[in-house]
Length: 295
Image (cartoon, rainbow, N blue to C red):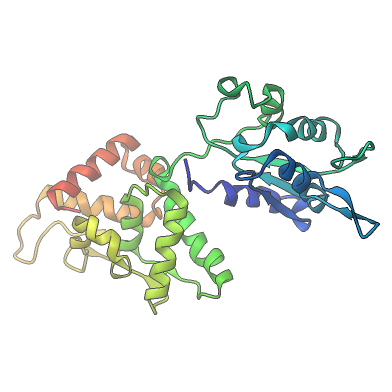
């Protein structure tokens, strides 16, 4: 899906190995004609006032590093044979040239999950598709990997946003629960946008519910759940209310789940494992508690 963090993952792969010290180059083939795409990728020699000038393409710029092609399904058919030659033999040839040269470039490509070259046989080479797809990584939407949301959000707050000149922030416990419970239709891109807005609005080192006004508006039940000394003390769950009566079982269960999500930093698989239930059961119970206003 759009916004799942394909570009971020490609950069992470690039920086994780020896190629990390070299260039990471992104090529977006949308809105390129076949000729423009060929020149942009492979370069070309041309004459300027009678002088031959070499224009190097993005592949040369990525020498020793990584070329990231996204969205790969929009790659013009005219450049696909040359890209296949690069992958299989490490050879490139400039447009209009008769000679080839060796080039050491890693290719990472990303595209839509529904992309199938068989359905686009008129414009997509199946052999290129399988050459690119020799190693495949699926990036599920955030709603299907809720246990990753808190870690991704924290990385954005401490690594990505400081690069924009903003101060690093931490997530408070209630903010973690809120971010984990939201479905994120815009995925990582939306998460980063929401965090950026929260940091710009806040002057605190730790973000809390009041820094996520838009999310709280659509998820008011979470905002109403504010554990304090009456329900939670030193990490323990109190069984009695201030009048000395046993608290409703539903409220105790909500506090236990809330505490587990906070303790395990939103890693829902670990929360479910520690509570002795399946992830699907945990999500159903959260939904039930949310509807009842207990969490």
